[in-house]
Length: 301
Image 1 (cartoon, rainbow, N blue to C red):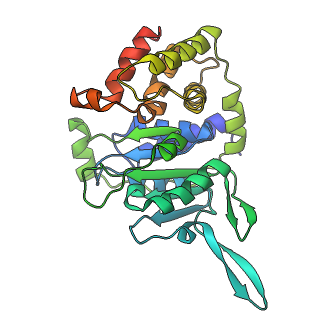
Image 2: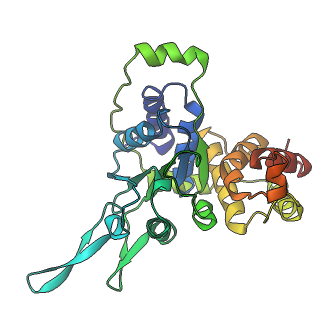
Image 3: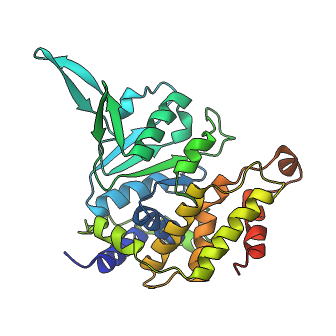
């Protein structure tokens, strides 16, 4: 097995040959896994969100399950259930028992199903019949979300949004990428032997300067004081930000978190955790715009 950074680099190159023009999204997805988090891919249908999740699972060699979220889905359709067989109850695991779980169109499912997913994401286990069943490691939920304006969508509760380490936006391809999309077939990635548990441990060891930690603290306090926000950044959100910054630095071969990693990680970890007031929404503010201003005030260039 190759060293973790080398294997991750090969996996990243393979994914770039599958999904053209989404290099930033691919890097963000890998960083989220290294941060032991979960990713929310957001964008209109047809940009490659599902393709990225499936290709990542194939290229990583991890076990994979896809759950198509629909309004008639039940919690046990995710977690599994107990069945009576040969005189005793036996637990039949659901699709959550995989290392990579694609929750496709997660905001089309009712709140009760979303809550079952939230428990698995937080506890890395499910409970059935009073018995706790651990989920495999690494456990990585990749959810896709359609814009709320589309018919048949349910807004994700704030508590569940906070469980997603990163929200990764999918933007339309650049003009120069369109010809490649139309003329070249994506190449199915060969499975790479990546020791993700080792890579996660190494990413946690990336050093962070005291000035960077103070900047994170300052930004957290500024969000709590900003009248455009209903609530400030939580400790969970700040930790997710720091973990993502370390993971990005690790992917980029840096032993120390730089200001660039701190800023890049902020726009992955924070906008979906910043909830605007009604007045701010009416005035045309956006979480990204508020974040940009707060980062500048917090001393992050």
